[in-house]
Length: 213
Image 1 (cartoon, rainbow, N blue to C red):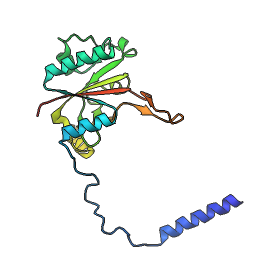
Image 2: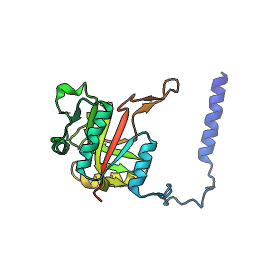
Image 3: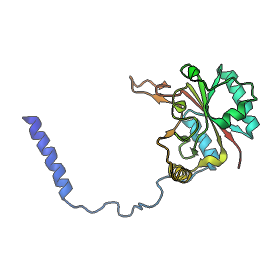
């Protein structure tokens, strides 16, 4: 009986609050101004800093040759026996490297590292925007233990709204059915507040950025 009485009291207070009109105590707040601070660094530098803060790894590449060299070094350091790739441009880029590449369905379940491109890099949060419209599809962004992203400096945008506007312009007649924002490696602390990496996706994220500015 006490619970019902308490519930009725709470609902009555909610109803009274909704009915009564009060003046806005924050009348001097501008709803049009940005809620974010201006960048302290150039967008590319800002992205690199935020990516590292989120637990990702940023690798600067002067050109496409440097991408190959850095990937070969990463593969050796991380003991990748092969690199799973579906993207046509990446296949062409890496075909003359020493890397063992695979795009076979039979190898997918056992893959350790996958490489993709992306739509945009968001400087504000150090995030990577990917979509189902890319050659890599949907699974390669979330399945492998190590996710490698190859992007260009011209793909770096300031904020999420800039990336979304870019997607709308890029796909005016065939908007992707899935858009995903990746901020660092997958992690969770749901169980006993113990941080676990790779719980729902890759436990390591690498972004290799080609300087094309």
